[in-house]
Image 1: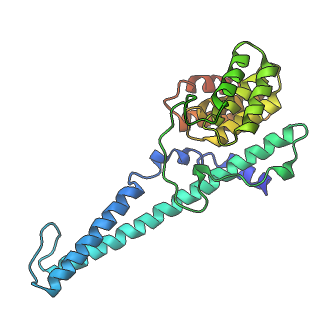
Image 2: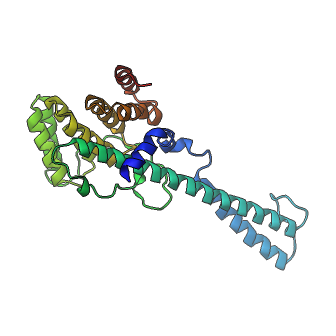
Length: 276
């Protein structure tokens, strides 16, 4: 099933650009729901007028309170229908994007030594929800170690980063792996996976590096380090000979993060791989 989904996702590159939520639809669901709530209040007010004095109100087309009430109810029905349509479209994009991410995890696992495909489990839905409307979130800024972190969490992360900066790639890979195991809910998780990917790059371990970069992207697909993770993943997929997947992954950087400084690097990597 995963293989079939992978072929679908590669053949349908338009799925991922749709995950750039700002392009999904010019009308935000929250704005539409706000309009619905306002219209509902106006309906209740007009019903009161119809049963009381019959006086006219302002701001709604119509010559009588009944005509105005009918106009408001028609608009409410239109907005409700539009909201349901947007909710369906967003949920469909989340499902398609999650399937694509799961397929990439499956492919990377196949390339790793000792990776058991049966242990991968279900891929968490993009946006952190399952079967509900996903509201786009603003990209989060880098998280610095602070009071919100667990005891020793910041210090352990800094030790791993220090080992990477000093060129101790094996030590850095081990320290980042230990950090991931010790602090599974850490806000530093995208950076920890990214650092481990860089350390494994330094060791020439393209397969495990690709897995680390994919884990970094999966932990925060719209975050501040998502573009870096995609670049690392695309580069290593190319090294492993998975050129079509590498081309799709590198193209996503320009699609999802057009303002990123990494777009030029991604394009250069794509040209080197001979991507169309």
